[in-house]
Image (cartoon, rainbow, N blue to C red; front, side, top):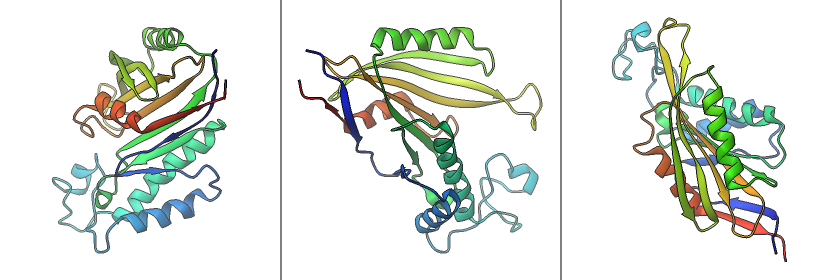
Length: 225
């Protein structure tokens, strides 16, 4: 007998923080968390992409033109939390990764949500159709992912997406690395959809494997038969 998904839990590793589902004041929560994560006395940093503008090199700040990393991190955390709120999707779990808070950078964002009545074949077909039919932003690379974790079979794709950067010229694209996965519990018509977006292509040595490894900590609760 098929059983529906009643709930799920995801035990994330070090560096990941889950955004509270009942968050009401994004700004205050983001600032408080950022100042708690960033060590006291952390040096000012130069945001990625502004090194030449501020005359800095390798993230250093010899001219004192950098930004407090706690303030920079707070902005990144707030952007993640606000994006989660704006989806208006019930039971959407959102988390972000920051392994080195002193850099002021949110390294990746993860979303997890249940989907009713979507098979592995339908999910992968939808992904393939989206890649084939979408030109803006263009998918520069797409590779299928298959695996098995304790919660079920895993199907999805590893994607590279090119976003044109108007500040750098029409021919210059910012690369976004993304992993979109579905977890399909056995004897269940529903799935858990997992999407991870990295802040740059150098965040993970192997992003598909890193996200699949995270799913080792996914526990799915099914309704009683």
